[in-house]
Amino acid sequence: MKLIVKQADGTATDVPARLNWTVMELIKDAGLPMRAECGGSCACATCHVYIDPDWLDKVGERNDEEAYTLDGAFNVEPNSRLSCQITFKPELDGLSMTLSKDATG
Amino acid sequence: MSVDAIETDVIVVGAGPCGLFAAFELGLNDMRCHFVDILDKVGGQCAELYPEKPIYDIPALPIVTGQQLTDALMEQIKPFHPVFHLNQMAESLTKLDNGRWRLATDAGTVLEAPVLVVAAGGGSFMPKKPPIEGIDEYEGKSVFYAVRRMETFRDRTVLVAGGGDSALDWLINLQPLASSIQLVHRRDDFRAAPDSVGKMRALVAGQQAKLHIAQIMGLEGSGGQLEGVRVKPDNGPEYTIECDTLLAFYGLTMKLGPVANFGLNLEQNLIPVDTEKFQTSEHGIFAIGDINSYPGKLKLILSGFHEAALMAQEAFRIVHPERKQRFQYTTSSSDLQKKLGVAA
Image 1 (cartoon, rainbow over the protein chains, first blue to last red):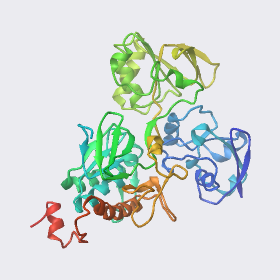
Image 2 (cartoon, one colour):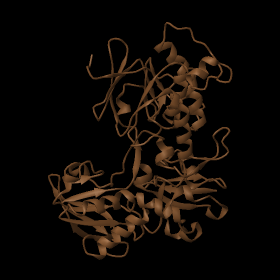
Image 3 (cartoon, rainbow over the protein chains, first blue to last red):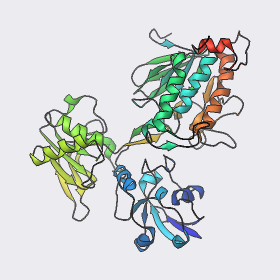
Image 4 (cartoon, each protein chain N blue to C red):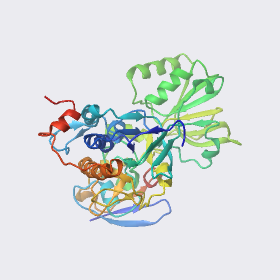
């Protein structure tokens, strides 16, 4: 199982996925740029990613707290999510996304 | 040396949980300390990022919030009268001829001590800057991330950006001074005190302030003088809001900041230390908590507490070289109990 994580320069990396890890943890564990300053407590918006539109249904909606925390992010799009709020599950195998500037710094 | 330097035993950079607990361990070992922290309050990330969120992995505290932990640590270190220099950034560090360290802050405070402890966590909390190319040239002239003096904004055409308490408070407070004031926020939903949201809505309804539901995309102007801010609503084309001043409140982020220039070895923005004394590459400078690195390091508050205790042992040898170290337990030592103000 894997994620496909793209960076602003277009490079795409296959990130090995593990059940019940958050997407933020998986990206960080793979050594990609991922600030995630607050460590996953949905307080900082520095794990902001853009989910590829095809995957939005499977990933689901932002939760309320996440929507508020995204107020501290820039260039928020309808497909913006905080990757610490997405828990990996089998249906997300192959999930594709792009890292935001908030996350890469 | 400097006439107005404050002399102390230990300077602690960072008043987060690990720094605060260091004051306890240092105090038990007869060392006074002065803190410098960029935030306007103690507690570091616990107070700034998650004051109301529960923490479950502090030994013997099954559940405690960030703020409760901070308050409890402040209570615990009270007997040692630590001094706090808040709202100040530790800016420069100099080694004096006598081997002591001199730390100067951006507010002009100068501290001198034989021991410096860097307990700066993820670094200095600094305002988030919109990732707009060329924004630097406007900063301090027409783009601001904080209000130091309200008078600066008199008769200006001000655009406030953000949806939290800072944005709304300054919109409300600057409205009477500014020649015009507008607010831009990504969505029509504000995470701020209900009273402030009500006041903002009233200003908008009374046409004393204008509200834009959009995100900021770019700046227009030249030579640091802003003329307008380009914004984009979710479902509509970009347009320009005319203004000569932008006040952006998007929260805080952590940057290593001037600690990077203290002359310490750094590895990926962390400070390598030994695991006996938690000393850095410089004698007399220690690093504890999230900012240090060593094999097996875990960024846990409890690790920082342990590091503080061991650091204090070596700090004692530096601050009190003439004295014999004595290891005692607070349970049984009347000497320690006296220091804690609990002696029978």
